[in-house]
Figure (cartoon, rainbow, N blue to C red):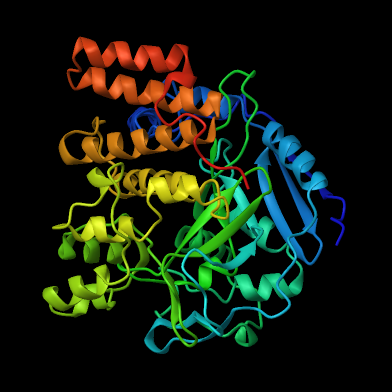
Length: 442
């Protein structure tokens, strides 16, 4: 199927030179969060200046059978438009391997209709809504989201507005057939906050105060996947094709619910419940949270492949967190299996970085703070894992970007001279990295 040309709405917001910036404490908190999250790679971010250099375009892109409504920085919009014109719509399988049906007290959910093997693709989809990570103009979020949602075709609008929200819905999802009138504008903002995920988009780098690479996106199928602390699937995003893929982490039998994790894995049950309640408004009742610890651990590890030496640090046998991460392919397996998505591990670690930041943004303080202790160690771990993956892909630009961040973290924590020499060698000659370009081509 051929991709329909993008359709542009004649809506644009020019630079906001006269826009009054937020109060200084708010700017300081936002600056701190962006500067110290390596996923953004924006150590000199200045929110006040960022706002002065933003101009946006609202448009829709037609991917054959689906429509995506975007509100993007003009420079990013141009890049996305060029990408959208190059790639056809992802063909749907003749017989879907899943269906959406009632999941009892969890509302609707995604259930397998056929056997899905470990690392098998559950579905591939384009986003329905894309917005900036931060909005750099004095336009209320509710107003922007109203424009976006009401731009969607009626079928997509009905599906999107039937999703659960944190503040305005009961935990039970409304069937799309019950959507009969336009909800109040604030409802759209709530929909995005509850259901969107973080994706990376290519951004122009040769401009002052560039856009942040991280964006928010709403996916209609992914949004129907319920949470589990022991998920059987994980999603990955490909910015070059503007598609999200959901991949099975272990074999899924017909009738099984397909689940993903909404939060970074944690061995602390109380912490998981608190984060889920604050961010999504529900108490988790998955097996990992309700079964006795010995039985939950047994089920969690039943289908986990034997860990490799490279993944040893990720797979501490005494940690529930490691069980979730080990459900992903090991680094060695990913390198050896070209059928796995190139970015499945990269996106898992980037999403963990995003979730760490999201937890911090939920409790902004008047005094900025730099991540320390366990949080800093978790960030460093994810950064080094991402660098290793880009090295295996032979991606010089992204490898240097992430290995430089990893080096800075090691220096801050008191790296030895020998470690600095090794990092400098990798930066100057990426091919000297031990696993450089080791991922097998498809």
